[in-house]
Image (cartoon, rainbow, N blue to C red):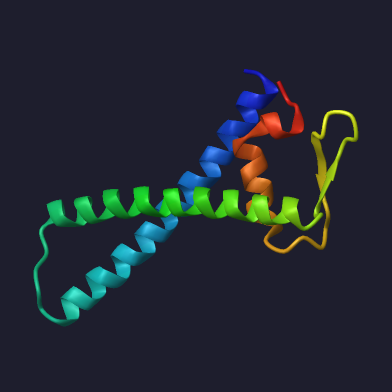
Length: 114
């Protein structure tokens, strides 16, 4: 597997992990509230809730990462190579640095990784 493929896999795994953990926490809260109210919910509904929620959260994270990268680029938090304008590094004082880094992992071509 190429370096770019490994970076993309690591980025996608991060998005999937965050999405699934958040979905599990939300399902736990919803299930607890339903038990307190003595309301029975079928496992099919929990499955549908989990599937839809996981997809929506993953999309939200990816979009948020793209927006954070765009903002960081516009405000000079990315160090670029002069000739090719490849991103070489992200400044340490960059707000939301983890989202900027996640966007770079999802798009390794930004750093010129093949």
